[in-house]
Image (cartoon, rainbow, N blue to C red; front, top):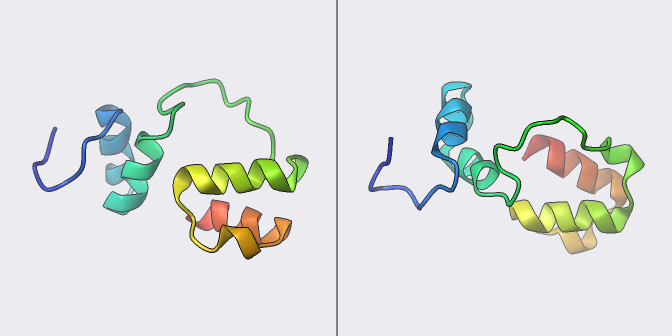
Length: 82
């Protein structure tokens, strides 16, 4: 269901499912607009197994501010709570 008050969403079904789960509009849109939005498989590695550079790139992809000064632990926390 497209809403004229929100930006274009790449994966509408995923966006709507996230909103129904209680995600904020901004977070749901950010997740639904990632390059791999809606892909299934659950094969992503744990954040702790990734390098700081990989975490930084993920934080960049989802728009986390202040990521350049964050430690690996802070990046993990920001990604989990964003």
